[in-house]
Length: 293
Image (cartoon, rainbow, N blue to C red; front, side):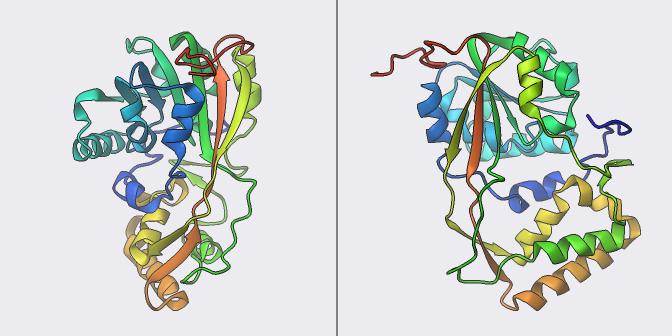
């Protein structure tokens, strides 16, 4: 992680209730895209590290015999369990409250490991090496995030754009100019350079795939408020006694932009990097099917 900052259990405290509603979804073709790229057929085991409320694990659950989500936040694990029950997959989903640094934790081996915008919170070299050892022969690590390189226009959308810049400024007014993170701060933000970490751990690749977005998403004021409270740097507990005042100002800002309470934005594309445990040459993929199957 970042020098001078240490993880603590308050990092996402109070965010789980807002996460599923507030966070933008991954591109709708993510599951089909990974099924095609990795030849997934309902067998094998998936471990989603830093699973949050189960967003990715549950999206991919039908592609595996078992999915295991790991997250250190008690509320996130509880939310994931509720979501699994709602989707009727509780019988094949297991939720483990643990830090990634505590793996392997007796969880066994897996065919696929996923990190969806979570890896930057971890002791990355340690976790990458551990996950490599937890993958079966031929297994892969999949790093998933929004495609940060694309430009998402607002032209032709039905409602005003979500005023992210104004919302960020309001957060800074209440919490100060330096990014908060649990009990500490991250003046430089979270680290990048994941490719170097995975390569150091002995993974090969990556194969890059982009699942296209671009669809119009209609968001409400409640969605936008939930989005703010789902973030580590603006989690509800950070506002202390000013939480209600902040939410009042946030809703006033949003309704001032769109009196109807509705906003539009483009669905982000999803960027996927597939890292192999072993050499990639001649590999048909996790399912070991031939290219013509």
